[in-house]
Image 1 (tube, rainbow, N blue to C red):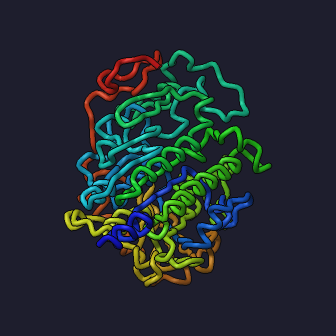
Image 2: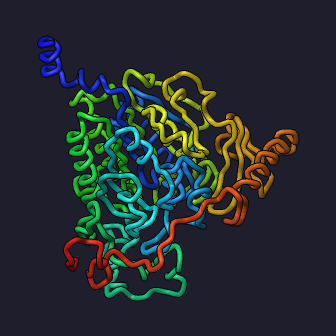
Length: 488
C-alpha cells in the first residue's frame, strides 16, 4: 500500500490515466474557411494544427450549418438545428428567443456523468440570462454572448482595425427600419454596446482596443481552467470569436501573415491551439483527452476566407458554406496521421462525448446525431451518417447519401467523390439516385418540414417576455443581472 501511495505521489499522470472517461476540449472557430489552415491546404503557417493533424485525424466530410447560431445549436443539442432552434438566420442582441432551457445540452449530459464544465468564448444561442451557458449546464462562462460585430459601430464592432471608427451610433441611434425585431433581436445601428460576461456578471464594455485581446484572453482562461480541473474529468467548450468580421488579431499578430488580417488571425488561432495542447502534454493529460478543432460554418470568401476546393461560402448549403475543416486529437486512441471521409456533423458531438463518458443521461434523449467514436478511433467509417440533410433556416435545400448530393430546388445532382466543387450536374444520368434522395427529403419534410417552422418534429424555442440589452447605450448594466449595479 505504501509503495502504491508513493507511486501515485510521484506520478500525477498515472492518476489522470486512471480516469474511467476522457476529458473533452471542443475548440470552435468562427467563420474559418475550409482551407484556412495548413492541414487543409492553408497558405499561412499553422504548425500547431499541422502537428495536431499529424498526431490525430482529419475529418474531411464534417458538416456544421450555414451560419452561426444554428451551427452552435446542433453542437450543443445533438440535433438538427431546425429541430431545436427554428429561426430564419441568427440571433442578435436582446433577442426574445433562444435555445430552450428545457433542451438537454452536451454540458448537461456530461455533468450527469460527473464532469466539470465550462464555456469560454462566443455563445450565440441567446443573450438573456435564461439562455446563457450558466443556465444550460455550464458551471462557468466567460465570453461575449454573440458575434463580435454585434455592438456599436463607434466602438469598433462594424469595421476592421485598419479603418477609422465611424461616428454614427455614438449615442445609440435607433437605426433604420427593420433593425428592431421582436423575436431575434436588435440589428445594425440599434445594437447596444458589446458586453463581456464572467459567469452572471457583465464585467466589461468591449471597444476596439479590447477586441484585439480576446483570442489571448480566452486562451489564458482555457489554460487556467485545464490546470484547475486536471484531477477530475472536465469538458471545456472553447468557441473563439476569431476569425469573424471585424477582424481583430492581437497586435502581436497584425501583419504577421503578410496576406490579410483574416490570415493574421488564423495564425493566432493556431497559437491558441498550441497553448491548449502543450498544457495537456505538460500535465500528462494528453492520453486521456479528446480534443476537437472545428469551425461553425464555411468561410465568407468576401472577407478573405479560403474554402478551396469547395464551391460556395458562409450562408449557403453548397459545400463551401457548410462543410468545415475539422481535426480530432487523442494520442493513443485516435490513430495518428489518419483521415476519414465518413459523413459526420456537429450534432454528433453530444452523443459521441456522452457515450465515451458513459453518461446515463443519453438514454433520455431523442437525437439526430450519432456516436461517431468508432470513426474517431479508427474502428469503422460506416459509423458516419448514411443520410445528411442540408437546412438553411426553415428550408431543406439539399440531401446527401454516400457520395451523392441533390440540390432540391434545382434538381442538381453531384457526385462529391468525383466532383467536390459541385461543378458537373449528373442528374440526367442517374434518375434512380435522384428519386432515392428525393424520397429521403420527403421523409425529413414529414418530420421537420420545409419553408416553415411549423412541423411535427420542431420543438419550442425558449422565450422571454421583455428582453433587455445587457448594457444600454448609456452604459447602464441590465437591472438584476449584476450583483452590484454599475455603469460601464
